[in-house]
Length: 212
Image (cartoon, rainbow, N blue to C red; front, side):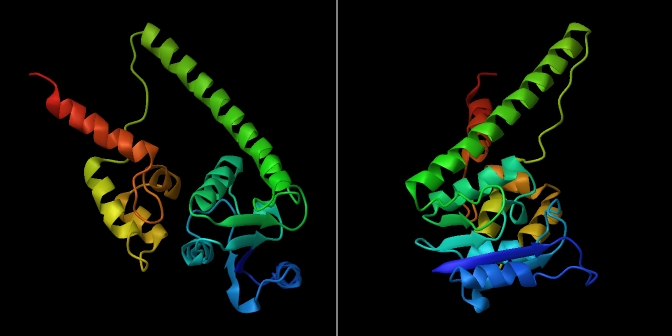
């Protein structure tokens, strides 16, 4: 099944999603299965996108008009599409940069792999700059680094909440005091632990077992 997502940046009526909806329908998406937001792509609370991601099932394909309609940035986009792939959901872009992306095909997966590599390169550069800054601070007798926003208690609440179809991700993030990016790094949309979540649990268990 094809499911579409459309987004315009302004909610004041000066922008319409007609062009996007027409393109999605022409690509075979049923008009009743198009989810829509009227919000900036940088906003984390996008109810239309949340509903769209929850509606997708194994074998479905998410279709967007252009790549920037879905992701806040390249890293967010790659994380979202990788999560879809893990759930057995395809992803297709109809126009603009990234129009060659269709994760149902070998060529489309190759193009997406290039985008993913660029995102990884960007993260590595940021990590190198952060580590260099921390090393310089430690050399001057200062300790740096932000405290972890996700705690074991918050993680348990997030797991329980994400396992319920009626959960609003934006409301959950506000309640926990974390961003949706932090949430999805630790917990999948179905409530399963991801790499950061497993690391948090293992770190806590290691501290418990450490000798006094």
